[in-house]
Length: 318
Ligand SMILES: [Zn+2]
View (cartoon, rainbow, N blue to C red):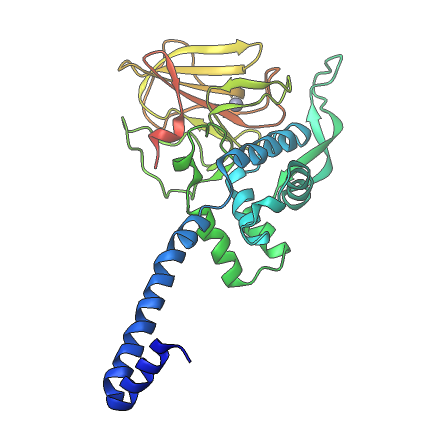
């Protein structure tokens, strides 16, 4: 038996209470040291994917959008789902998995008949053609289809709340956003919402161009998924500075608010105002449509210009 063990043995025999105290503090110190050493591991484990991997998710979203009628999946929702499904082990993730898994999970399609102008034009007749229309499921729908429990759904939402945009500046691609009706207020210059539909199907910024398929074209406004004939209203008072047809934007109305702000409304079916008309906020100025060469389905493309620069309209609402 070594000398130190004999020493401890003698002390325990002499003063058992003191020895117990030593033992207790010894164990406490080991526990505290263990916690301090493992804490950084737990802290580092929380942010899900590596920032370089964000691009795998963004690129998958863009590729899926280019094949699915411009239905852009929110890449942060994909990361949040994968954080849960892969138990945060993003080494198991790869571009092929991301693309095929989330295309299947989020996108569905159907063949529908749509009304188009007859070629050659026939008065009083409407022609139809069949088209594949793509739809995107919401995150909630996807989670329900995966049979996630309430707690599991909650942890996916917790990952989503990490807001990866804060960690990463290359974040110009937005997924569709549902704005609860009436549940937003204009924050700058008192712009109101242009119609009674609050579904933003395509955000402002760089994305895959739905017509050319090229990446990088600036989408200078937001697309609101309006059915044909939805009433479009001036989002602030001003003077109509354009009301007419443009090749790419179709029937378009521009309102000059004379304080450095201009709003534009594209792809309209019917225009209710002429150049020079004074309009008040919320006056009906047009009906939405699907006109112009750069549209893949009925929607309202809405722009806000500030001193000649296109701004993200959603920045003006909260
Ligand atoms: Zn648009």
